[in-house]
Length: 322
Image 1 (cartoon, helix red, strand yellow):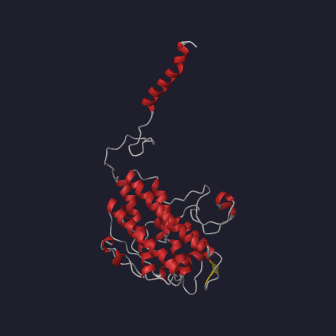
Image 2: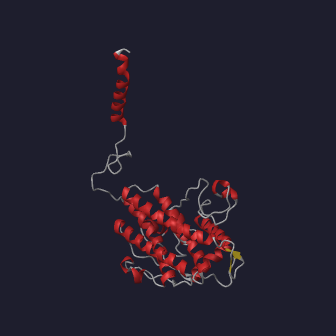
Image 3: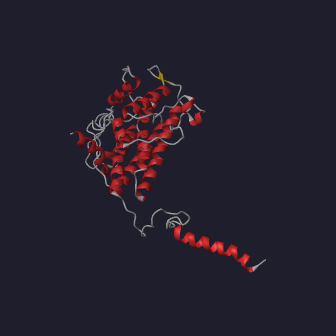
């Protein structure tokens, strides 16, 4: 073989290396095998961007709601007793008290409550916090919500603290709202630190929601006494209500769905709510406020937040309409 021909593979390799050196993205310092779109950050620098602060602070409202709901339900007391420093002078929740639930459920709910404390602490430490908003966790407030969901006045009024089934149905209302909010916020988060924290929060919120839905799924055919509705029917009513309040397309589904809405259009079980691609649904801050206010209006407080949510995003909606 002629020497010139033998040199061709070597020349080709050299050309590829030269072209790669000019055109290939920079390699990340944190993960050598992964390429970055932007130059690597200086060592030790991990910026927090103002827009990220607003979005993560918005989530504090839901974290406060979940913390008080879980802590009171399991223990009979909340942040004022366990982590008063996180309250920052905010008013005490209305109507929250210990629930009459079985021991297994109590242990799970207590764990969830402590997780919410850690979430509040981490978000406040990194992004800054604000006082706990005024929360209405009374049986009366839940009764109004359940009446709206089923389209009739339940007799006696629904009491989420009465027993395990009722408390789990009450819990069905809350974590999923935060979950879809974190999914929706992800696309608008810029900083690496904020993305890491959001991913961690989302993972735990999704886990909590999955546990609650699984516990309810095991009881899906059980009739909730003294009402003539099963557990699965109640979850369908509550999910439909959240869709109506948010004024959006179907981003919420109960434990049982028509097969065409199930995973790969093959199952009526719906333990994990997801879209037609089996990806988590997303919601905007405005849609979340419409749900937790129970008013279908992000500028009109009510529901779980009688005086509205705190933070720049939530108060901004009220300022625009004042």
